Image 1 (cartoon, rainbow, N blue to C red):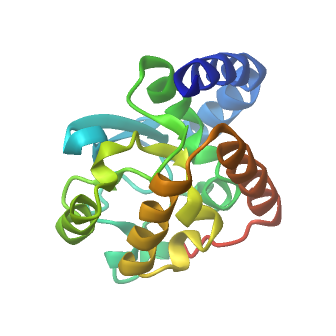
Image 2 (image 1 turned 30 degrees about the horizontal axis):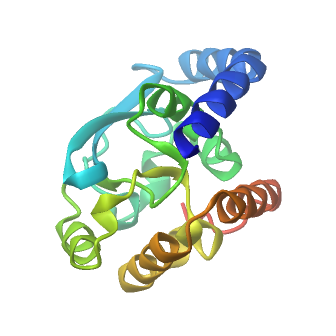
Length: 186
């Protein structure tokens, strides 16, 4: 049921958001050099690596680490990068991952391949059994502001509580948080 819901919603969202995605792509191309999309290696279900796209918000010379590990992340943002991140528009290309089955709308956010501590802690709690999500229980409870231990706790709680109604609740909370631009540290 979850896969069917994800596929239907991703296809509808992809069609509805096609024009805004084109506008974002054009804005990126006009304001900075480099590719429109940034593809990162992420950890998916059962700790398998997959490629995840985002609209590029950072300069092409940015080190490949989690943003919170950069000394001054603002120095690496493209001219429209901050706006894309705060509005979460940079995440829209992940609809592709949902359509092909690498991700779900709701689940733990996929870790970067080099976030060893997060991956190990999630594996201890069995969270790696879940399909990673565009949004998740940890995101609506703090997003970038949460320490890793709290994220893993919330991911494990989601594993126990997951249901269609809980997913709908998380999607609604995500919509509200994105509109309010809450929880984005950089």
